[in-house]
Length: 130
Picture 1 (cartoon, rainbow, N blue to C red):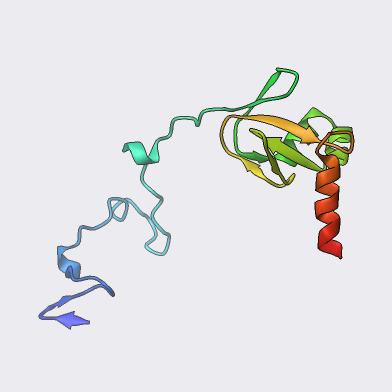
Picture 2: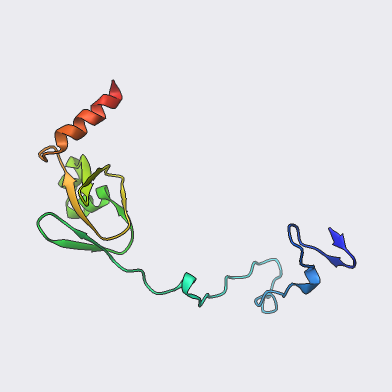
């Protein structure tokens, strides 16, 4: 699009001549290489480490993780046998699938075939097959 003598960017009403040149374009050796993103200092793009996710287990022990993870991954971190036996999880009292993502501090129970809620889960899963 041409407006007068200045070129407009697609989808923009600001002429190309009025747009500031990227800070890194003067320092680049090769024009074909893209600019590297500049470090952001505002609070939306903090570089501070994210807080740890604390998971409280039924025996009162706490496990901390650096990033969000699934109920199945928590079970695997406790033991391979538990991960294999896990049918579901109980996050803050609510039954969830083993693929449920945990993104904040929670109380977690791993549901196996010996758990009181196991029969309900097995019946629900079996109903999908019928």
